[in-house]
Image (tube, rainbow, N blue to C red):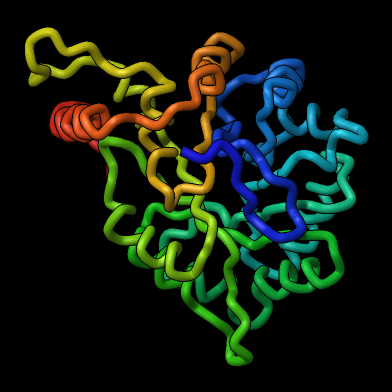
Length: 278
């Protein structure tokens, strides 16, 4: 199981376990600095000022070793110009490594983004000007996301460089609907919701006798054992959960076939019994 991934030719190699904020979790800047010192290099920022954005702004020369990805909310060109300027100012960055269009869930949204006056043209120009590395997209709509990943302009230019998709032991549809496309395109895939909102850490009524639920590092290990996953992000709420999740760094080993199967079976039970999700 590889430890490092390079998401683009002009980006630094990063640990395949990344760190994210969601807007409803709390991490202090010191927590983020601690994670970076432990080897975390892929930082996925929710876009709201928080400990992660403050930490990035404080990195100084170490900023060159970090890949900052931001959940990009703009849909129109005007919104995109303002959002890019705000991101660069907030994080004291001259360049943003990854801008992922945030939760694009319909064909109509996508057509607005890539159509006349849409945000995609602005990001393409910012890439050419050196202010942006990769254009990505986050979605729960797996078949649509895979189709958009393969989409090119009339000039043959690929619109997207990266996909961010939900993937965990209970939600494995990306194995069928997304990863065959991203692997064919040699496109990085970033997995989120690796703990399925921590439901994977809990027992279910159907557990076999003596079964012990996995711990957080086991869940991320499952995600990263899939070679189609370039990075799996963890979004802990506070230093305690962060320390728990980063224990994977101390035991970076691939799961056995039996362990993978046990995780899949547990994921199936969680899917049957845990709170509903789409």
